[in-house]
Image (tube, rainbow, N blue to C red; front, side):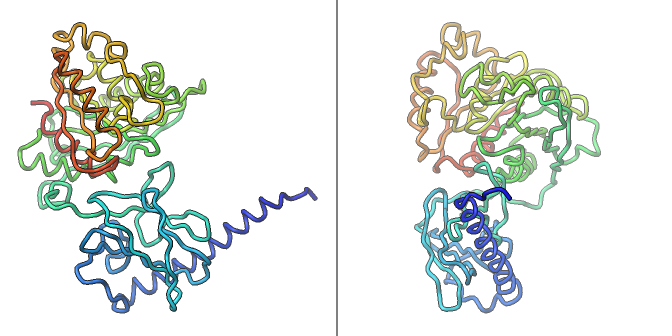
Length: 404
């Protein structure tokens, strides 16, 4: 018999105990929330976020946007809420439930997890989303005036998941594609937005967390945006040679694996299988954070492919580790030395960032440098940090500029 590592045994035992506690949580919470909601005395004025599995249960958002969590885990020794990296110790009540109220949160979308006896797990009371490089729970704090992010009584498009063959990975890979209302019945061709997720997320991010379909449905129905197709691909590409789509960081060289995937695989697949316009003026590329860097390099250095580029909350200008002294002319030759010609190549060049994002001042500074050099760049900032509410607002604005 092989010798077993004691630390491995202890770690495994800890995970098993946490799993047992979580199993108890699932059963008791489902019973209490699913069938006996009258047992809960909810705080006055609180509401259940749309991200809850059970709209008659916890977590609850209070009047001041703080969040009350209630977790049934009677066998657990310690339970915490990890909300966007801030941990809150929960207090155990006599009935075995663990309760805590957080500090007030800014409106928008927030990932969170439970930490049960030291093991981080998703909350079975919440829907789960792929973010932070794992399946995570999430909570939505309502922001007044953001009705275009919700489902309304308007003609609705469709979001479908399809698979294409990647010659880069030599494997089948998924795409999520939004087609506007009327696509299935009509014969017209549509312009296309190729939209990229951030680090730790994948092709599902924009369609699920980003509410792309709601935003486009409502904008198109109100006449604020033209009907368009939106394609969300997974940019976490690993070439057979071992390269990563973003393995070399914010650099032109670091973009080459995903650039090949997008231009040589994704776009040809979309143009073969969907009714799309195939000229550069009918293509846009945009992305958030990591995807913003991809859109900056690929979009701006391939103007024969894209005439519209959106760069959302990128860290390449500064505000993150390793980003410093960004040289616009070096990274996009001609931007500052042949600016008139650069401007002619793009119908829309758009940058955004959250006002509480550590990247904001660096982004403002680079926008000023661009404008001082004569670059036609649109810029906007929105209340919020590095999170989905800012990116929804960014897409909402960007879409209204496109293909007109």
